[in-house]
Image (cartoon, rainbow, N blue to C red; front, top):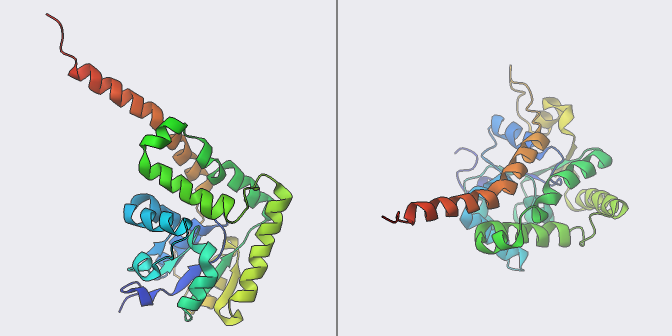
Length: 242
């Protein structure tokens, strides 16, 4: 049976915050045969998952078997916030805690995903329901739930960042946990996962900041595209006066 054939085939879960190399880790795990790997991107394209996460952000328990069905691994927000619950539900799973220099992580986060809730006007949020609940879910789980609505206080964010690292170390059994920097590449990752290092395949070092900035630029343009579409439809519907 291949990894991911059923919910019980989940083998690896990332406990690191977003912007710590989670996209590179996702791709690496998939190249190692531990995919498909669940990532925040999955929520964007799966409305049923968005609804599950939205309900969870409002206090409902997550149906992990339903969410992770078909996946061999999972990384990034918001999954990483539930490492303790997942460690109890899947005791055989290995956890990877991705870390990076705090100052670089903070600036990357502040300039990318932290800006998402503020880049769209309120009127557009009211009519674009999926986008609205996606942003509300992020706010409740990350910016309010994790950072207590105080992420802009860098020293407070620093405390949360390092507390998370220590909490993961205390919660996940030592033999099931790896603290990992993606810059270290294949060797420590493959050793921990007990798989061979891929031959002739470089470790995927993704510049996800650049990709994220491109995505944010597109999201910011959505209200204007919507207005243009409405005008274009109106023009087409108006019959010329003879």
